[in-house]
Amino acid sequence: MAWTDERVDLLKKLWAEGLSASQIASKMGGVTRNAVIGKVHRLGLSGRATPAKPQRGRINEGTRAAAPRSFAAPKKTFEADENEPEFLEPLVLDGGDMATVSTLNKNMCKWPVGDPTSEEFHFCGQSAQSGKPYCAYHAHMAFQPSHTTRKERPRPQQRILAQRKVG
Figure 1 (tube, one colour):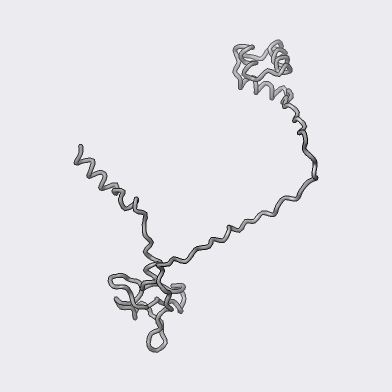
Figure 2 (cartoon, one colour; figure 1 turned 135 degrees about the vertical axis):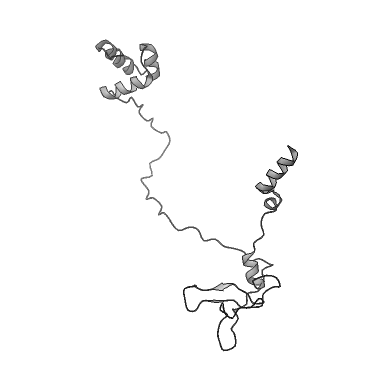
């Protein structure tokens, strides 16, 4: 469809009356809403935004400065756990050395202390709980209880096997 002078004049008239692009398209026939919007844009017709209504009863208090933004995350506080075992300083071996990989045995806490690339790197070395690699304090830190719903939920492999038995 070509935009003839008559159709452009009709478009300008309907646009000036305040009709929407959809209404103009349906009245003109043979054009889409998007075609009307494109032609209005190319013709540079006004956007017809309605002027803002003045607000009643508002007192102009002047402009206020914006509150300064804080980009730091709020500090989290944690309450002490009543069941948390007492912290024990890392064990110092005979001769003043700390527990290292070569001095650890199965009854010593294997919790790493410090930067592994540093010469001061060592392990806790306190007495480990039986069957666990850590002392009571570090075991409490390492082994967090999981949600019961997660434990009760069957794993994907278990679901597949259960479906095969049913089907």
